[in-house]
Image (cartoon, rainbow, N blue to C red):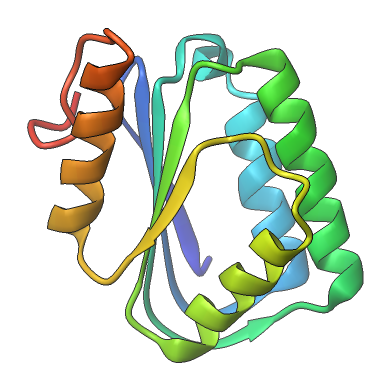
Length: 137
């Protein structure tokens, strides 16, 4: 499986993608995340795309992701999402998703995990939410 979903604490999750990622696998990872019992208490999601050589998506997949994203925000509007991508292919796709302009989830794209976790910490502390991405939970 080209992704893993790891709950770092009851309120934080890290999704890690490697190798080739299909549309179905991207959708599956979101469904797994949003249907988890812990989702109600989620404060941040960190998605890491490392060494992804192929990300098989199209406009329809982006629209499906947008619908899941919208539903996730409606269910739990208290979480933020940071994305780390070391491949231009992934970064380009994520920018295309943001171009749909439907997501209300605070989200940023980063080159490093350290930068992503620092941003999560600043957003959570700015919202008066306890916890730290730097200490993983």
